[in-house]
Image (cartoon, rainbow, N blue to C red):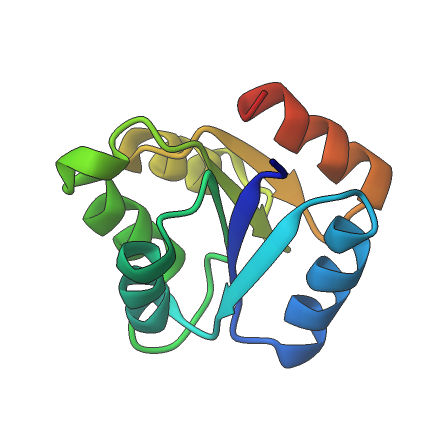
Length: 121
């Protein structure tokens, strides 16, 4: 059974790019367009992995990670941040919120696939 990944990004083109590159690698993809929608989708689809952007309206990636980690059933779910941000401060904040890893946009599909397989074997 292929892994189900929830991608949360306010950019429709980024959601489409993620879906295209990850389905080509055998993953099943669900999407959400911001943190609020992402939190709803987490509970609906119960993914094996969450990939989230940081800068989004309504609820940013940090808040989404904290909200997901506050739910007992998602405490062990890997969370990858996919963002144009790359400062050590932001990475440290994401880690303290509960993120498993960080990937900088634009992403390399093969490297993203490898990172997913590493955190979600």
